[in-house]
Amino acid sequence: MDATAPKPYCIAFGIPTTREEFFRSLSAPGSDYARRWLGDWGQYRVQFVADLDTVAPDLERAGVALVRGLRVGQLATLFANHRVVVLFSHGLATKWSSPMAWQGQTGSCLKSLPPTTGSLTCVFAIRSL
Image (cartoon, rainbow, N blue to C red; front, side):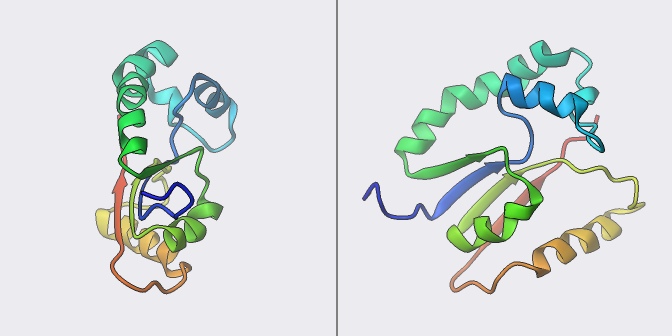
């Protein structure tokens, strides 16, 4: 694969993938994701980050773009630049009382994305403790 060519496949992380991001998210207003890990950074590192760090080099060699530290304002560009996106993220669901309401909110977010040519796959993985 040409190193300068855009990568059609992407795994994006709106959740912390480093120690620094984890501790920064602890103090971020309106963020509760890191606080939900009762074992703090040690538990999070063992149960998530260590596995990601193990597979990341193989994914990148296979031509998958890894985007870390993703923010909602970057979604449109992300989807415009990749044919397939797997998104790991977390959001506060205090405003939504049902899966259908959540689906509606996700649809509103995706509505702002530019039209694409070809297929687009998006997976929202949300972990609630």
